Length: 114
Length: 113
Image (tube, rainbow over all chains, first blue to last red; front, side):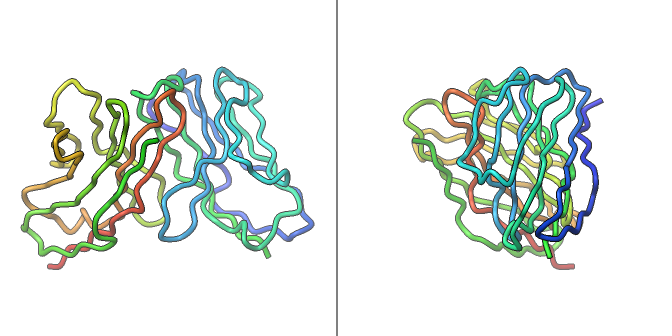
């Protein structure tokens, strides 16, 4: 199984809502990533988890809160978002953080903040 | 610091024609280089990667790329374009020390019938 799954596929939320994005992989990978992608732009790294510990936070606003409950799951908790946070949120995983490993991406969650 | 430049934000070819998507990198250490493809409303799929084992790398869907250290290039080619190749293509390099993919700005490939 070389698949990264993400739920939900689409999400519409108001600026006062709290919601969560979920990512799951069963490849035994120990590094997991969250990216944000705006239209016609490359993905921008948000967070990296390595062995279930947060290892990189790319100065992401605190209204985004990541969580890694176990080695297969990665969540992104959303609260008090702004319309400019509307984007495609991609999750990825790799065997570990070593540079030589490719990252496997999920299909993404299309988020719209109203 | 590593960086990637993709020349041409949009490339258009006819079906059956050669596909050439250009990528130049900057790295102070031997790089690990990747090409990803993204179809509309989907995630990224790995086409191929260079990790110093061979300079000519073959990937999926008939794509290949050649690592040229003297030109700091890693261009993606396919001998004959198919309509299904229409997508966004990203070249990427990993930052030494791991964990961060640095992407180029992407090249949108259109294939005309």
